[in-house]
Image 1 (spheres, rainbow, N blue to C red):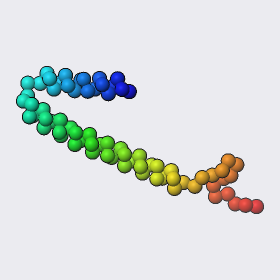
Image 2: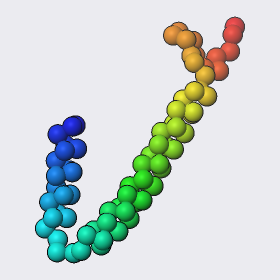
Image 3: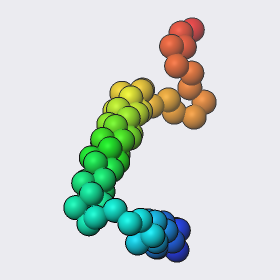
Length: 72
């Protein structure tokens, strides 16, 4: 995973270096990308937390027991 992260970073730097746009434009683009990625990451975290809350609300059924089973 670490090598994938490093490779992505290197690729992004190479694309920026290859561009003839001014540094300020590159900064603005990176700032916009940061905002977009932050929003996606926040959404992913919210979904993860929602799923954990749902799991915590589910009743724990012991082995050999059935949920909503009637006793005889």
